Length: 54
Image (cartoon, rainbow, N blue to C red; front, side, top):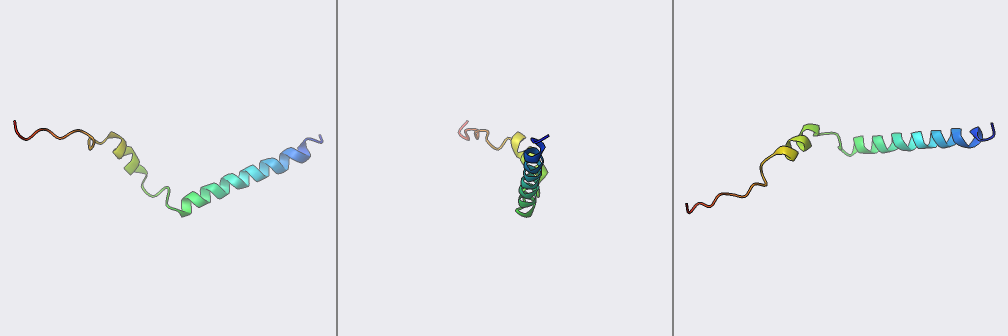
């Protein structure tokens, strides 16, 4: 039972830390363009250009 004295505040502190990290990310625009990263991953922009001499 004595271990709860340590675990409950630790759990609350970790929850508050997670909430603070989420709110920081939300404030700094990390969730603004969710579809852009998905489309950049499958785009063909990195393909080499064809030689125009042929």
